[in-house]
Image 1: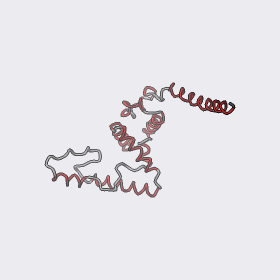
Image 2: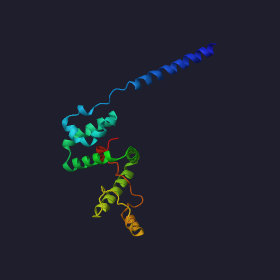
Image 3: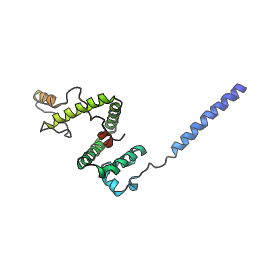
Image 4: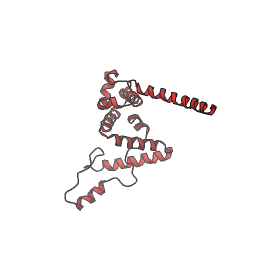
Length: 180
């Protein structure tokens, strides 16, 4: 009888904290800051993110607000890059965003020497794209050629070489524009 009573007490002790935790998650507070709580300057900088601001968690919102606050101090080319990256980010599917986050986190875990190597590979890849006047890194892929095999070799020539990273390296510059 004493064992059954002890088991019951232990079960109740374990159940009540779990129930209390569940009730706390059921009464969620609104995630701050709301879009309307941002300053006009922050709203202007973060305008590409407005359609999905309501879906961002508090951590990501705070990171974006921090970036928006640093925006006036950025060089014009950094500002343009940030605006383009935000616009590109909004266009990604949730799966593509998750893949980008995982890739970023994987690169962050690399030793510094390996990260520099990845960054160098990425820069070489970007330069090779810049040397192709008909192709820009932001251009969408070309539609399939109805003429068949002739275009397959041209497509293979313009594709990134094996071993090249599919996304930019995790650098201090990228971490400022790609909050996790």
